[in-house]
Image 1: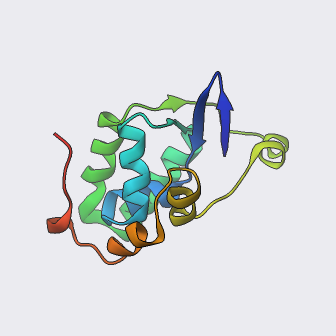
Image 2 (image 1 turned 90 degrees about the vertical axis):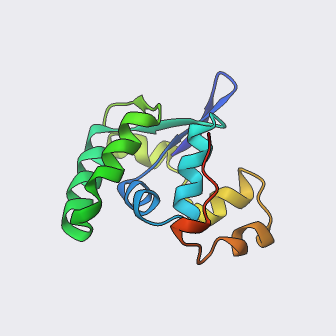
Length: 126
């Protein structure tokens, strides 16, 4: 869910983006990196965090530490779990590539460059 609050874009991510961004250095990772760079306010709910923890333990048990580091190192707003009514009213679902292109201003070429990127190719922030 994304909405502008007091001039700052607030973006609520789902568990899939948290998992994929923790495990693969591709589009979901870049969405999380934009949050770290404070280009938008990352918003998470307790349910999303629990779903991400459960999902990464099940699918990628050797990489649970990456998710926990992400939760510790990336500032986020902890919101209450949205009600079904709030989801219907505010939800604007977007794939991570679409978000990067339409909201963050990436070009199709930028997206294509990282489509199959591996961790050794990532330029980490200082």
